[in-house]
Length: 40
Image 1 (cartoon, rainbow, N blue to C red):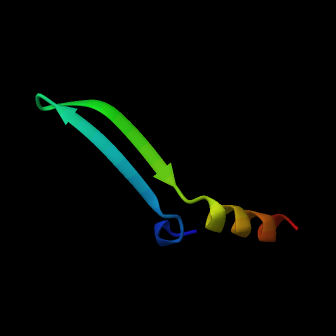
Image 2 (image 1 turned 135 degrees about the horizontal axis):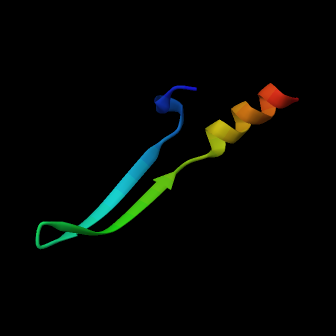
């Protein structure tokens, strides 16, 4: 599966030139559909 098939977004909150929070969000639907199709 190529990375184009699984949208992924990282949000960084920066204070005083330092990362103080990191949140990662991904749409797992394409991955799960491909996994289910491959394991059926």
